[in-house]
Image (cartoon, rainbow, N blue to C red):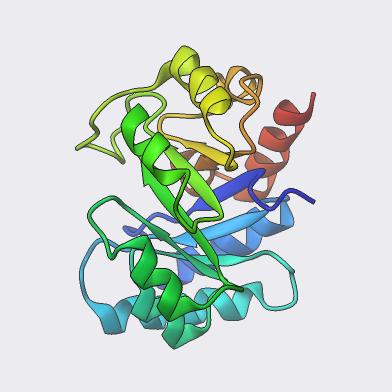
Length: 205
C-alpha cells in the first residue's frame, strides 16, 4: 500500500472533539496518512491534541505525522515528522528521530527539490500546487506543468499540496505524484468519510 496516496492534513482551527471526529471519519473513508498541523505555538496543547488523535487512530495502521515539531513527535511517539524549510534541519531531525521514523520535507522551488535529493528524507511535499487560503506565504504555485516536471526531477516520492479538491484532483494524480495532501477538502466537508471515499474514487478512476 502507498502510505502517501491520500494524505490528510488537519485544520488547527477545529476544537479537539471536532478534530478527533474528523480524523476518525477520514480514516473510515480511506485516508492513508494523517498529519497534525498546529500553528499556535503552544507545545503542551499540541502534545495534548496529538495524543488524543493518536488514540483515535490506534489499530488503524494509518501513520500519524507531526508537522514541524520533532519534540512533539517524540513526546507522543508519532510515526514521523514533516518539516518546512525554516524548521529544524533534516540532519538534526533524523538524528533525533532515528532511522525508522518517516521524515518529510516541504519544497517550494526547483532548487529546493534538487537540494533535497541528497537528504535523508522519505518523501517531499511539493507546495503549493494551486493558490489556497491555508498557505499564504508561498514562493510559487507549481501548477500541473510544474508538478509534472518535479516528478521527472525527483528520485524521492512526491506529495502534492495546496488548493487541491475534487474538481482538480484527477489532473494532479495524472502527473505521477505518489500522494495528494488535502486540508479543507476533507476537514471542511459535511461528511469527511464520504468526502474521502469520493476523493479516492476520483484518484483511482
